[in-house]
Length: 416
Image (tube, rainbow, N blue to C red; front, top):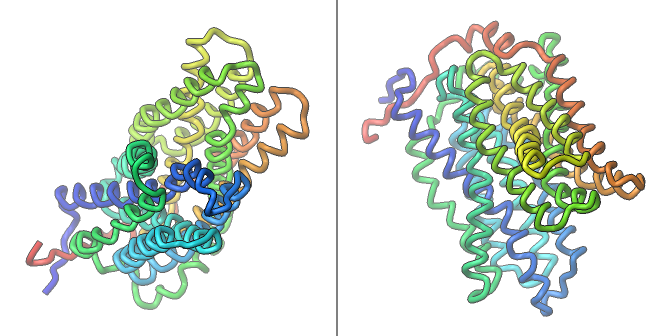
């Protein structure tokens, strides 16, 4: 018979390691399309073009909001365990379908399925980590877990470089089907209970996002996630191109992009530590503001070492803000609403991921000034900073919920 206790440190470590593994898979599956793109174009039997790659990317992105919203709602209704198992099996099946696809139509359908799985995993894992992390380390645990997405994407690129000269490009999709082996680990580590959720409340999660005490914050969080993902996806897709339009060489632009990602990785951990010291709101607002300021400086002529440092700050501000917004949502809503809030928030945010690159493309085409791209980058950063300043303080709503103050239940399996 199961007993109830608070979360021990070794279980917290197990949850964090599982979260890193799942999001590593998430990143691998998401970035595999970019990895195999050149090989797909070279294989004339597929009849693919550059436009085809854009269409496949859009199909992947269109599935993400669906996965985020459904997974978040399901996790608060049926526990984190069941939706996480379903999402991992779903994304594995989608990658297997991509590996077996015979034409572009089948591959496109498989990428829609992959997008749904990718969209589902982020709110599920974020909710799971937030449930079990110590309150004073919640943002740091989320930053570590979410950082695994980028590591998975890097692994996809490295594996492609090693294998694609020897094997068919669909082999990389086949490798992406292996996450199903994580299911036993999920069943062992993730509790089957829903955090602090009584039976009478299980059908009210979505409605509770719009009660008089939460609806303003809910809308503001949606704007913040939209701004953060628009900023992330527009900068990662367009920053090298915009810098080349401003007179930088391709090699210099790629160096700045490396500094951009390195700044996000290293600075993101520092900002998470500061946020966990009780400064989540101000750190999140400052991070958005850093992105705006750094992108403005990048549009000017400065010494190269300074520009590399500013690129690192731009990366921190652009990529770091997303994790902080996720941590803010996790801190604000009580555990029984956490996954629903994350699912809907990230679902709306995915629309920013879709709109961001198109918005940058239109801005650079409409305005003749080469600096227009940098000013366009600044708009979502400023929007995010303003939105965060209007948000209630973290934990104000969660702490007012009597259920949130209770210890998190954890099943202790006798064979664990």
